[in-house]
Image 1 (tube, one colour):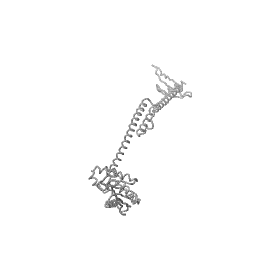
Image 2 (cartoon, helix red, strand yellow):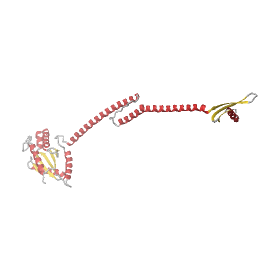
Image 3 (tube, rainbow, N blue to C red):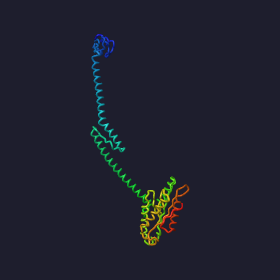
Image 4 (cartoon, rainbow, N blue to C red):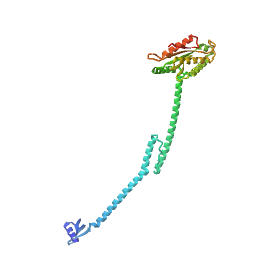
Length: 328
């Protein structure tokens, strides 16, 4: 075998070399070099080694390297997974919780679980902040609700004041005019009749001249109370029309019903027995005019007032302290 290897080295014709050759049916590594002796022939020295002698250790080393690489990769994945469980997931959960808090959702508390201490600290801080924001929001909501209720109450009071006569407490002229237009339109749609009673205090100027304006105010207030007491239906609206004149707007009423209401008002005011020395009846009395009209196209609501006013003056001319009904 060595001779064959030497022959192969000589065939190469090189002073040094390395090659693989099949020797005796097995692959060998041949390493040789040629040395020239002084004043003599050259000699060739060679080393022949079967490939199996050095290939097996190399393959083992490569396997070890691959095994170490696999172990390192597995360790890296494990570390990454642990970091995800202990850090990334709690942070994602905190982020989702913060988003819910931003939408005002306080119902689902956050639980940091087994997160690291820093994340737990962050979670507790966020929870404390969220609790403060929730309490502050609830307090603001309560204050807004209180202020809204106060504002609504104030608006109702202002609305009532704008619709109420300051002296007598019944509806004022402005509110009466609005309700007349409203009820007139409603009665026109439904085909119902609308009644109006005009009330005037008899000889009120003489009463003021004798007893003074304060007594006159008391008299008007007493008459307004009687009107309110006698208007027992929800659809009846007593109002101060101006000076010593009052009106009662009565929805869906016939002549007999309106006349009966007017007579009750007249009798109740006379029964107050407020002294009036300049009146033929010796007490404060009122004259009343009643008008009943069924709204129709082309007929204005002012027609109802004009008819009631005409009936009122008939009552005055007829001796006062009486009720007159307008001609139908």
